[in-house]
Length: 126
Image 1 (cartoon, rainbow, N blue to C red):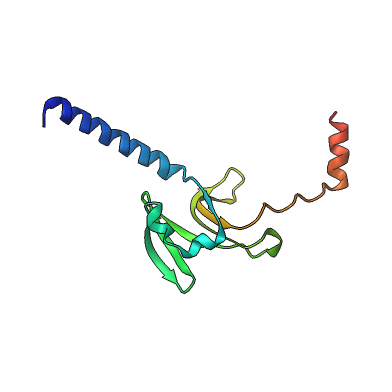
Image 2: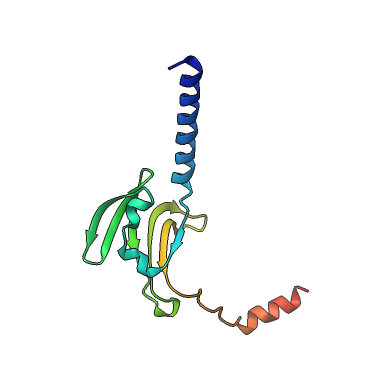
């Protein structure tokens, strides 16, 4: 390898490492249809399946972090599966999570009407 080629290879490696560090600290929360959960999506996003059950992957490894399968318990928000990891505590002291990928169908849930006290507060803020 010539010196220029070696320098270019080192620079590209540094760019790759920096890009991976950014991705690891800011997971993309990709959106996929619920039916895609049963497909070979883990390898497609560059992750490794760590654990699974009869429904599919339960823990995956991506960019140096474990992401655990989650699913909501409120049917009002529709069927969904997502993989997230802890990001520590938020400013409010509540647990914060970073999502890697979400599988869900249909449009987002409809917004709920604002309570009267919120509408009144909005009117006062004009």
